[in-house]
Image 1: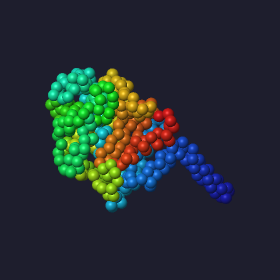
Image 2 (image 1 turned 180 degrees about the vertical axis):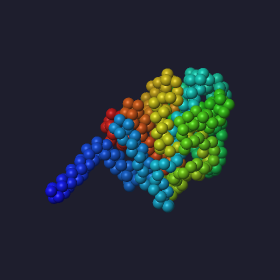
Image 3 (image 1 turned 30 degrees about the horizontal axis):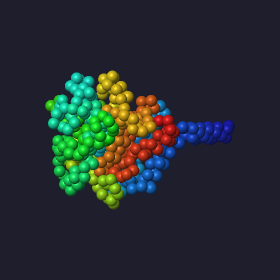
Image 4 (image 1 turned 135 degrees about the vertical axis):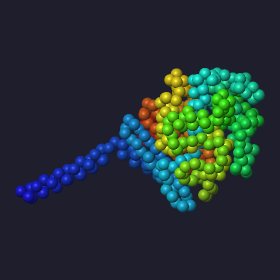
Length: 368
């Protein structure tokens, strides 16, 4: 009898182990996660990207995958950390645009208002609408492409830039095209929107973003910077300013005032997830204006469109960002019920959007 009981116990244990193994093998998400992990690791192994944080949350499939690879600090060989704060660069534009659209909801201005209503002194202001500033169809030159500006930025990295200086540089160059007749990405557009927000509210852009977005969403590790080189909170390092130079550290080197409305915010992967889901799913704007924002898009390619301070790739809405030391992508799809946040602690020709596209291929094939 004792032997029979022992045999039954062993059999039960064996069946339990086999059952667990079978469940692991049959988990449909694990092969997808393994593939995403492999392509992330491959970038660390085969490129100069020092560290990556990748967050993929597919609510339909039940995937909630936060993965880190590489170093957050190269000289000290410290690993990447998925909770670290980082500079989100041009993802900031979605925040500036959201505040601007909230003012539209409040009747403070209209998207078809001419720029001349608020800044009649600017060139072609009678031909530029507020919507054109939001969707990058104004034709105004991108001040960060100006070589004199670039030489000044890197030659005097602690210089505090005023929004007016940046806009004046943008208008000192020729327009890319007649307003409304083309599309060209320009940081100058968003700086003007930030100035307009301050003009209409009488408050700082920082306070408007914090009071209208950061605080309502309870984003305790997200904020908007106006100047200074310091990056708040617990963070790693950010490397390279467009090209690889060994250990070239830009974490706290350039005064962030140059980015302002176009790129000076910071956050974490989990808080960006929360933000981009609210940005896309609704709640920050009236339903009617939210629908216009999601659908009023300038088609740039078969997959990409740009709207009211919002980028769309496939069915995913959000934005991306790049500045010295930091590059990132944040996207959410309503139809897929999926959010992807990717952060590289560097600025190199290889952008996190590349990894986003690889993830999409793994998760959805060509249909995303």
